[in-house]
Length: 419
Image (cartoon, rainbow, N blue to C red; front, side, top):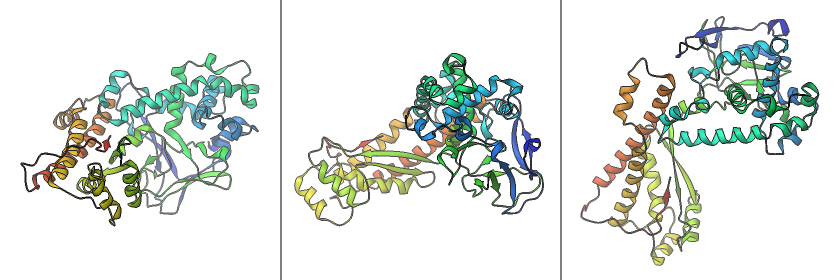
């Protein structure tokens, strides 16, 4: 990079040991000297940054993207696959070699679940993440099937690689690996033209450590992409940033909330009236409630007024709710027991969907030789289960506080749907 225009920077590449002895150590960017907040750690000129503008030359990017068939990530992955095919002749050979070394592992030193086997994905059974992984994998397959169309549309690719039709040159598994590698390191730049908004920046992710409360961000400045640190960094300490990432593993491990989606029952004869009530109180007919770790009691309390609405069946009671100010529902002992029982049942069902208990997770994580992918998956499901257990406990405590335990839950033919 220095030979090709990188100005003096204040970082070095260090190594951290890989969890898997078969893989090379993971590189990361560290300070090469003491830095103060506001210092420019590095500034990578645009000539060393890969964007769609570079990939497609003078092509109209909007024409390509409005087909809704291929994402920017797929275009960048296709470009890097062609460049890799050139070997050492490619200008990008050193960068591609580094991406291969990282193997899409990111700072967690574990490959993306998009590359896991079916047996390994089973570690995520019970977690909503498993469905998201499978959905993304299907999306990558659809994009792969459109590669030939894009190759013909993009004149720059056609001229540079005239005989290499993508799906003939690259099998799907190779494309998926390239896509995951790009996904682990692409940066979403702000305040730049459309053709430059997704960029592969050498010295950027996955070499930079992501931290959600960090304000340092890769930014496009005067023909370069630079990183200004937001805090003091001592010599050889890890450089952190908060640049947008699409790395699935990072999003998994940073997960600090459970999302409960509650939906009004569309078959309810009073659906429209209830819809007006929830809208008046700043909610939607399909409402997502965020359950943050450590804030489970507050989340349960926030859900209750919404859930009670599902148990209002008498038209006169509904008129009373419509004329009231605020999320007011008539609360009877049988209604409250029914609402809380529905919540408790939801949390119990979700917990029953996992393959392991919390105690079994703790036991697995105490094993220093645990498979790295199993470790990451277990850390995730353990966090999810802790949130669900805390929600269940908060719900159970409210049930125990009910004055009359002989009252049966009210029937609710049009109770809200939870997922």
